[in-house]
Image (cartoon, rainbow, N blue to C red; front, side):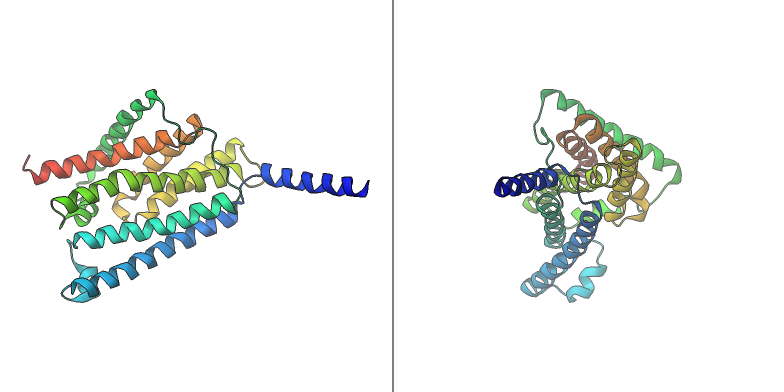
Length: 258
């Protein structure tokens, strides 16, 4: 009898653990530490690359150049994704975040989100147009400036496909859900709103571009709302890809003289 009671108690504890919400604070801390770790990994990779390539001026010159070599941009992204991946791993295996039922399930109707990404990029351009910021395209030029041919294509794949996937998984699939589904009022309207706003702000800040912060934060709001309405990450990923795609097409057109 005592053994049955003990087994019943253990079963109840396991069920409670599996159905409880995400551990919001530890997940947010893990995301912050993951971001810092990603920056550190990126720096270490660049130090190694500078030594291997004998880059003139070393790390000091690399940090101040307006058009860094393609490998610097690629290693910076790779290091960042290592940090993002670590935070995602923690959230799913230790932070009690559960995958959405159809999280990565595509649908034919998802093609509409391509148009949404284009519209979002155009709206952001309209918002910024009255201010005539001269350095608004600096991040894109900095990322692709010294890349040509195969390296240019490689960076396009990284920024057009992998970056949106990793960023949506972390900011919408982990951070947004940790806030909206965790805490004392999981799933409530106020928790969802806070999750949308906080994840969007952190998304904007993570890019480290003050001039682009407003546009990125607004995009973050749209992407989080998509997750709320669709209960999937595919729509936000497609919208994000399309959003980035407009900027890349503009860069290609600029390079070709159109």
